[in-house]
Length: 95
Length: 370
Image 1 (cartoon, each protein chain N blue to C red):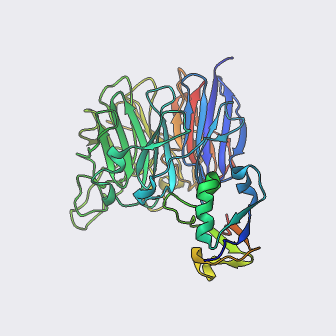
Image 2 (image 1 turned 45 degrees about the vertical axis):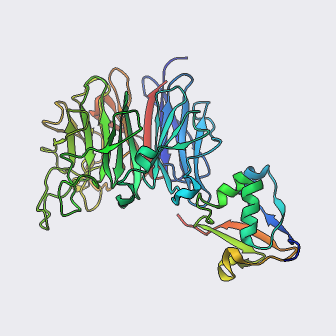
Image 3 (image 1 turned 180 degrees about the vertical axis):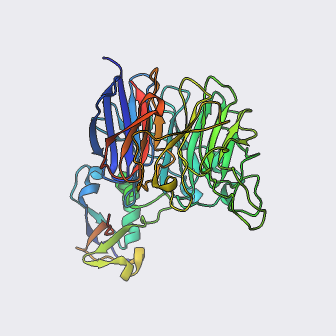
């Protein structure tokens, strides 16, 4: 297993309050699952917004790697490459 | 500062705060506050410097508890919200009830899936209460249309009553350490057994300090015409207990429907109790003509209060936590509707006025004199 690639986590506006106002975070992770582990350990307030107590990504959030929804890739096991941009976005809603 | 009337109004799009002088002639409105997501529960904690609390049920980013220390001019998240232990396997879906505890900073919180949490520091940290959250029955409770929620917490010294839909009424007599189902006389219409040990769809429970042991319950009624197993079960919707919730009896006779959500007791007279009867099919008042019904003799008879309310073509619902009564000498009732109206019932409900007509759908109304 090689070194973990450095990726960028884009922080959506409503979540910036949970990571000291940062618009993006730089993380080393080989998969989305590792991104979540990293967030749980080092950005816990942010993590609690994107994952529930069981560790699952919240039901109404979508996770993108660049422009691809991980739902269409390998879910939390989606592999990451250096320079990838990961974004958690609320699902579209109405009303 | 002169006494003021404060209302917290939890809506589908955040929390509002209304304020008036004791005359209640006109109310000012602040809000919406929070991130524009549903607020199912609010609490006006009048112990010491008043604090307002609101649940903030964000479908995207999870549940939060909001707190205001400036009478609702601003709200901030507490340091944490209730959360199940990771190994528990359950995840918080909604926060349904917030109540003050015995200690100055004690709070209790009922959630979905039905469980109870406690804070000893004004909402900054929370612990799950295992006596009810891990009760032997807990994994057998099942959700109603509103979810599987613990929506009612009633404290009475060392007794604690909780209401669960659909789980029923549970009673603790040791300060919340242990609980037992206490549903004798509480009917269920949606099960073959009309009086099961637990599993009832309790909607709301209230009590009164001046009548020890007296309690009132709005249960899920509307089963008078049931013809299936177990037979019809009329009048199971509005109930009274005189033994601290150990047994219950119907007081629904005289109401146009025994179905409804809120039940409120007069602050100075435990014999005066209010309900909002609804048709089961539409969850709106019979004939599209809204009315609050009041008993002045502990449920033996009922009178319709509708002066000032629409006379026809009104099909709103008043939800379980959307009616409250203030504690002034001649109290006023307040109810919010799923169509976003906030009504005041002056003179104990004798005369109604609409305070605000176009709020978001209202889940919760609490009032206090501060």
